Image (cartoon, rainbow, N blue to C red; front, side, top):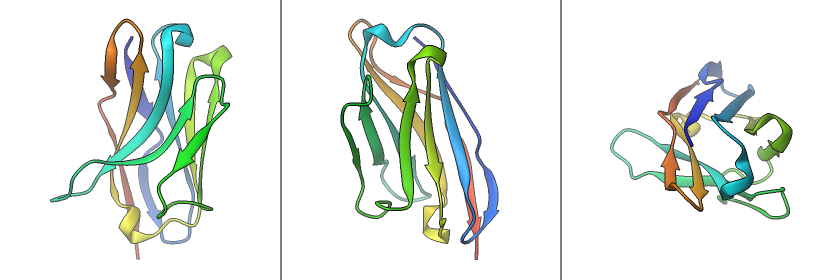
Length: 116
């Protein structure tokens, strides 16, 4: 399975963006998906995760109440709605999938820049 992110860009503080992660094939073999981010000089961190079917989701404390993760199995796509963005949200955002066959799969990343 391959993952392709889109939706990143430049936004002012307080603004919103929606990231998309499209899987190249059916998500039936995927156990869970998530969004990670990595800012310059920092380690990659989990932003939000969701189990296949959306039964469970979890968020980093820093984004709770502002970000929402969701999925559309019919479109093999996962989303991250980001509201009330802050400059500290600036990072490269990566889509991740835990696949029964392929293991841990990463997208190429999409840049999110929040200006103050």
